[in-house]
Length: 290
Image (cartoon, rainbow, N blue to C red; front, side, top):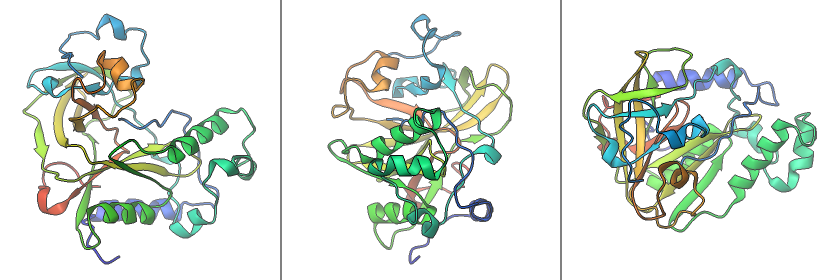
């Protein structure tokens, strides 16, 4: 591919296993909303604040840099997916043979045998609309339908001869608990990243990643967390320092009770989301590399 991407054997093995499982039409589709994770209140509570009691727990991944203090506690939702039920990653050739366009949605629903109005159809429609939405000011975005296209996009952002790595959240223990209070166990470690590309999974019959880069300043952190039940997580978090260009209805503002541009906004990444950073500024032992 020209540049050395810095992926280790674990990632390559995972990719090969996924490709070997491809059946031509992808795999099972998770109907969970794959909305992109794009504050001032410090969530240091023994229990979730009362205004969160009736909020969708899956939205509770947002916080501000003021929250990044040792001993601080916040309610966090960490989705845990069964890899065997997750959409499969297609090779570029197979992905390119299938239209990826909202205009082609009727054909795609027939192709994947989904009925109009079904949960799967609505999820596909939302993903295609999101992928075709115009980026906000200062943002470059791309929906990758294959590993090769995702790497091409990242290389285009970092430079054709650049070297980079993918970093992600790691669950050090496994349990069925998705939402609970987590306490910061140690000082968060910043991952030096003059540039970064975030890639979020989107609901679709096969693996689709919404990848984007914002020109505004961002910071990447690894946060060591322990849950009320003893679960431990090495959580990847990104903090966006300038939110002035975000829409007023962005979900993070509703969760944090703030206005666009009034504060930085941070969010945790689930295990299956990726952040790409240049290898020359990323320490090998900061977090597990896929």
